[in-house]
Image (tube, rainbow, N blue to C red; front, side, top):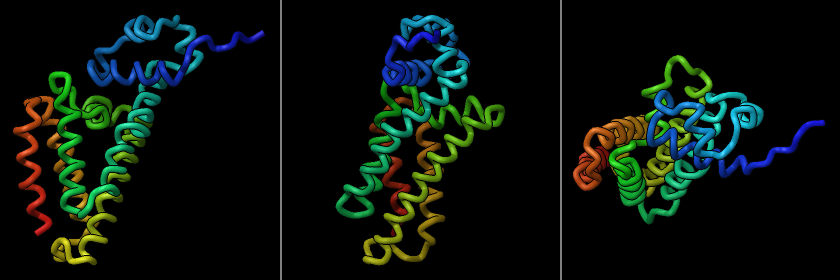
Length: 192
């Protein structure tokens, strides 16, 4: 007879996400995870397959919570420039928190790719979603005359996502949100 799972997997994934985000994949051991989650190794393997499976679940949780919130903030902005400024600044503040832990997705790209193709797909999906959301905001803004129409919205969005990735890596090196936020204005000049 199979035993029923005796822990909340969603809460476990959320807690594991925080640990992976703070320490990184390589520095986080299965023992660290089982101690943090208060479960045995067998339970971790039964629920997630292995450490990689829990890591991917943590990335998916990150995507459905923080990354999704960033994309929603784009839709809530009053104009394109303000919406993009707010989204970029918010991501920088989150990345600079906790002595510069950065962005979990960018950290995953730096630490796990190209060895882990499943993680690569999750990270690429997040990047693509961000690029597509920004491109749509820019397309509408160009039609309204809010921004210059001299650039292709998709290309400009790809630039902004690339800029953001670099900014998020910089947040690990120099976790000073205020200093990094000033760079956002330089990137927004591309909308002129």
